[in-house]
Amino acid sequence: MVKKSMNVEEILLKIVLENAITHNGKAAFNSVMKTFAGTYPEYRPQIKQLIPTIQKLIADVNAMEIGSQIEKLKQLDPTSKVFQEAKREKKEISLPPLEGAIEGKVVTRMPPAPNGYLHLGHAKAAFIDWEYAQMYKGRMILRFDDTNPKDVIEKFYDEQKKDLKWLGITWEQEYCTSDNIETHYKLAKKLIEQGDAYVCTCSNETIRDNRQKQIECACRSLTSEEHLKRWERMFSEFQEGEAILRFKGDMKSKNTAMRDPTLFRIIDHTHPRHGNKYRVWPTYDFAGPIEDSLSGVTHAFRTKEYELRDELYFALLERLNLRKPKLLEFARLNVRDMITSKRKIKKLIQEGYVSGFDDIRLITLRALKRRGFIPAAIKQFVLSQGISKAEGEVTFEQLEVINRKLIDESTPRRFFVSNPILLKIENSDPITATIPNHPDNQALGKRTVTVQDAVYISQEDAQRFQVDTVFRLKDLFNVKVTEISKEHITAEFHSKKVLQNTLKIQWVPSHENVDVTVLKANPPILLKDPETGNETFNKNSLITIHGLGEPNLTQANVDDRFQFERFGFVRIDSIQNGKITAVYTHK
Image (cartoon, rainbow, N blue to C red; front, side):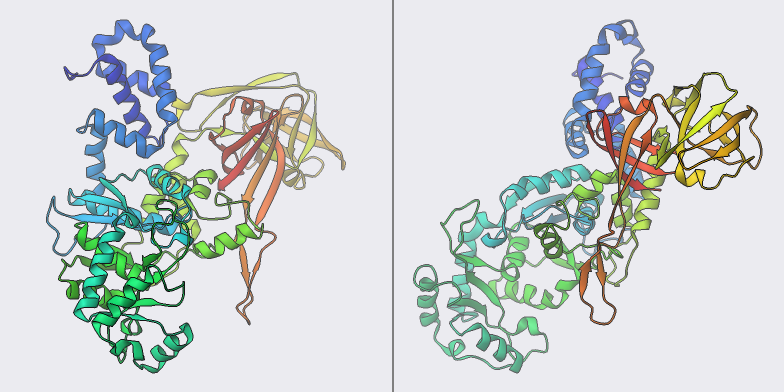
């Protein structure tokens, strides 16, 4: 039934959004028209007049990230069938129940540092936080941990939000840790007054040596009054590296994280949000538990590498008499032959080995999007790893398998030949072939391709032929090889009937085709010496494949996805002067 509060354009927008969200962010005109006519028959007389409106809505919605599409649909109709179906799908996700979780009360948080584009490991953390919030009808907080001004880059506040929205992840609250710095100062002062923190002016070498030897330094025994004075001097007098605020833990502890760790340090660097207003900044060890507690987080997830710091997390909250969230760790996502380290990625970019964060050899979300992976596949892949602490290594092929299953049915086929060689065809009249865009999905329609007296085929296929070899030009007819040379192959028309056990190959017309260059990632990007462990850049980690595509590709747009038959899935990356560059997704 049509809601009384919705006019026809809102109804159409709702249908377009639902269609887009359920088809990887891209609504299809025919599908939208079918749903509209079938669901709202009272509007059928107006359909012709509404076509321009429908086309505009589809164009507008398809230009949005899927996360923005979800937000828009929630505003328009929070009871949409899309969200009901999503709830049913959640039952298939094998995330275990949360200890102490109360429906409607669960609060999670995603705390990225705004210093780079998000990668597959971040996607795992984000989906865990988001799925649990959804599972318990709670809420997720997006908190930018930006308390190291040297490591914060302004554009990444927005760029990381774009990454999350592309994944389809939404959040109910957003803020920056740096905005609460004054509260952090008050709590730090409280720790000093209680005798639970002290300002240390020892050198880095002394601090490191004392921690190793489990020896307390002379600063530790000074009075709280003296440390309060030193604390004030950190804001004006002390220079960077001359003083730090340390937690008074246990220097004899077997847990090195408790040997008087650093809570605040001086960083004289302009902050993109606060300029030079602050110079004393909290470490993650301090800011993390404080923000989790004060913001109402009930279940805080982080990777297993922080497990040793759990004791410090709760000790700080205990000394400050603050609420303690549930703290849960999961294993980092280790993908064989792939790099998740921001440090290594930045180094590769700085040294010119890769073109940027969207280089297709990386597993940043930008790179995966550019390669043609869809958010639904990434979600299924990362959640399939669960939240176990058990360390393990997954393969990128596992993501490819999931993505292939999800995009196969909706991806049209096209012919492409790599390293083309001319095939002259004798005894054949010009013919126009009608070829299905998908072997099983008739809704994707058909296309026509005209052939005269010659086509291009792949060198790889040509190398398999001998004189008298009979093979089929797919969706056309059979030919018999009569002559082979370095420049071309000559064949004659043989028959139209499909022959059993005969090679079927793709082709493109010789008189009409498109120049296509395919970029293909060839992992690993770094090679490790088995004896020394030293890593070197793999110069063969990116392959460029030149070829020709069928003339119908002239109608393609950037971001369109195709399966080049007998070659693999690709995404159109750029179109310049009639030439196409595509990115290889997977087989």
